[in-house]
Image 1: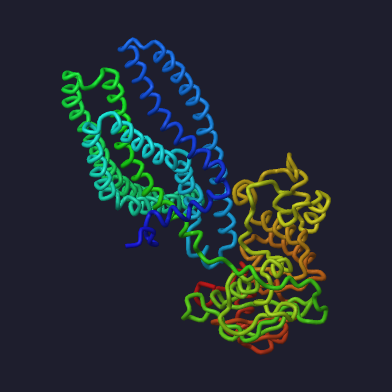
Image 2: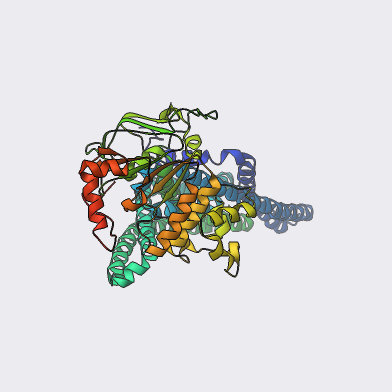
Length: 594
């Protein structure tokens, strides 16, 4: 049987120890100080034994020598304890930082497909709950197990030296207790992993409740969310109770191990003293050794339990870190061809699930400096095209070219640097307005931010705010209207000044007044840009150089606005549906999706 098999606690912890390597000096200092403290405790008791023995025999030189040694050991214990606490605090803080950096970095490199298949609460749970529990282990329990093992071994050695008969029984008990501890604690790492999964689900429900509080209250879903939370809490309680049951058994075992040697000792030790075969000082020292021994033997099962629980937590964390990231390789092309099309789709096929085609042999060209529009019913694949252009998903067939170079040859960060994306659902960071506009430029000047805001028709609104551009927008921009958030997103795209602009239904969810302001700012940003636009309202794409009509993942029609109307096809029907609707409702043919 392999001790460090892939499913074992030792294999899990070995992966964690990789993060400890850079701080091996402080870890070594912690381990050395731990060993010294454990040995110091044992030797101090032994010196006290010599003090009593010297006093009993009237050896004053021995008494003075013992007093000096006791003082030395006390001072040594104080100094070494300082280094023990400081070193563990230092390396645990650094390791915690490194783990959080690693998880944060890895999350940012994960493909969108992985992110969309999971809830944000799962990621935040691993970042906080899992890492905090690991921090507690490496600070408190990492060296505690070694401390108790060293002290138990030292106790046994000194006790054998003093009286082997009394010690023998304790040694047998130690082996028996270790066997039982391993047997009883074996399921603990699995239970701990189940706890972490339940806590992640709990975080998900809490985040959903907070993020959707307006909808939850307006639809009277408070009780539904409460019941869902209650079910998860009951599930979490069940996992905790399984762990506590095992830990309770371990605790009962500890009590047995702690009391049995003492009973044997007092029976046999009292007999030796009465027979004159053991000095009273040795008896007192032996009592303290027994206390150290049985407390250590009682703590070792608890430390083994914590070790296995932490191993389960580590498994839960590394499940995330083992997830495959986006590709990091590729060319960083700088000299772009001025004559090549900015974007080309050549018979591109794509499926989210590997079966149902969302795009079926799509082909179109976006020349530099031109505006191309994608229209079609919901689920026809318009937004999916944007996800492929930005490298969020890998297409399954065909070829996408960016400035005449296959997108698969580009380094994703270089390709994305050439693209500004303004979507219907604008994300804002919980910082200031200026920080949100300039999020793509760390060294921004406020003058540039204001210039972008003016072009985006948002400057006048910001200027009258009490704190101006330093106004905090709240979480996800909750303090701003949809139109205001949209114009901030446009200002962000203006400041980025990328040559390709993707507009994904940027005005479809706005009222008429907000739409007019946003459309004006969009018209400004489109100047001298290569633009690919998706819109519900066909009135916003009438002036596009070319329009492609998608239906069920295929391009059914293409041409200018006038040419498409003349074909009397899908575009003609969509346009007539919208112009005949006074409220200008967005079309909704086809299935939901893509």
